[in-house]
Amino acid sequence: MKVTFLGTGTSDGVPLIGCKCDICRSKDKKDKRTRSSIMITHNGKNYLVDTSLDFRYQMIREDVDSLEAVFYTHHHADHVSGIVDLRSLNFVMGGKIINCYANEPTLDNLKEKYEYFFTHTQLGGGLPKVLFHQINEPLLIDDIKVTPLKVLHGNMNILGYRFNNLAYITDASFISDETLKLLEGTETLILGALRYKPHPTHMSLQEAVNISNIIKPKTTYFTHMTHNIKHSELSKQLPKNIYPAYDTLKINVL
Ligand SMILES: [Zn+2]
Ligand SMILES: [Zn+2]
Ligand SMILES: [Zn+2]
Image (cartoon, rainbow, N blue to C red):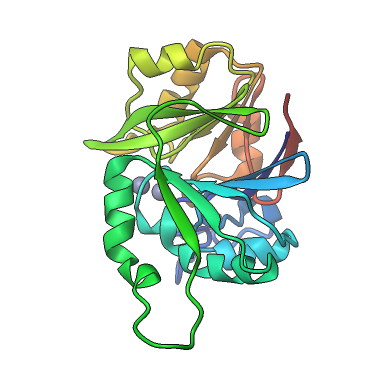
């Protein structure tokens, strides 16, 4: 499996609109962060975690012309808003429907927010063709075992996902022992690490390092980072085998 980091930024993205801080003004491409999402490519098929607010730009940047499925973490705007542009991929795939997986609260929210996808009131302005599925149990797609991972984002029940030995968890502030058990044997861990200072609904860098030390994957990548984090500085500060991800980074995993 190949993983492409489509975006590695928090909900505002980096740079923030109007911000004049050093990191927002940084010339380093690794300090430019679109909203968080990854693409997994396996046997010529593409799978996404989330359709971010920057989905259209990310798909064009990576020259993507096909998509099998989207796995949603939760319904916050930075993670779902690109869903409206799935219609472009439906179109280039000759009308093929895209399967979208999420937990119940996220599905309820998506169905309400995007109710017009399913109500054909007038002709014109193509609608995304998606099929929503609730995911509660592990699922086998191709030869990828997809395991939903229940985590807390403040008091919200959201999902991370394990794809064989790769795990992706963003926006979590708490991971239960039950979920940690499902993460045993993870080789590559992608984890949201918001900023240096603690936050009520996200893990800080130190909390994310602690979780990585519990799971003990071979390699950990941090994502969903704010404009307080300078890539080159954080790279030097992190323990061995933990790296800050950046937009366009591609890694191969088992
Ligand atoms: Zn987020
Ligand atoms: Zn800034
Ligand atoms: Zn969120």
